Length: 291
Image (cartoon, rainbow, N blue to C red; front, side, top):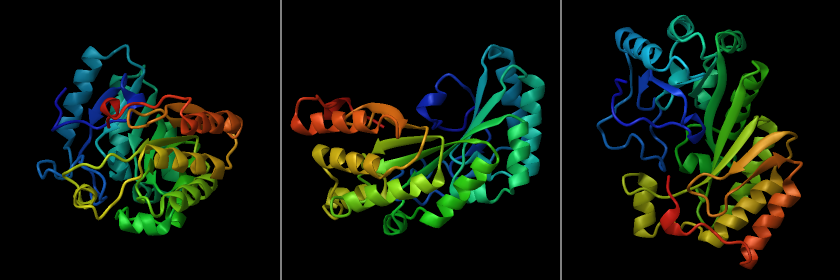
């Protein structure tokens, strides 16, 4: 496959056909994200020829794969006309792959009308991955997310009304030690109003090539330790009031891999966190944790 630079994808899309339709991220201002901060991957939309060539290559070698992921960081930002053209090519050349997923930030989702999102759903868009990070407005401002709690809720409701599976990512530790529990509580409250189908909690691992990583290395930003991350995770789960939402905190960055359905499995998950806090449940060693 002809890719421009490294490809970032959700862990759950490991077995998907990956078609790169954009390069980089249209926002690329988040202080914690180092995916596109090296200056070699400025945001651009790949041209029709590049996209078509990759689709034809995928059709030749991936005829048995059932899922497609459109990379890079914000494929949904494309115009509706371009997306329909891409989706139509996918249906023509990869008819067996009926589930298409992509990253879409809040701005990209809100740039579409309900009718447009519904049209994409009918053409195969099954899942949108959205980085929420936090539900606390001060934290969102500090990390330059370009979103507010209210704007995240509006985006989530648009996806939900179009019957598109919305998976949101929250970032433990991103508010630092001082605002750790406030960040967790507000995130739980806001994600409950968003009503996504899936919530994925990751732990912040500061990167040297990011503004937040520079603050961390200078001592300006203090990251919660393992205990602090567990307490933040506990507060988050206690604050979520959703029915039948898949909750995952089993990413490679997490100290304690857990997953379940909220609110059904809340007590089980909280009990496991309590056992970890007491030292009777082992944590993932730092040398095994990764992004």
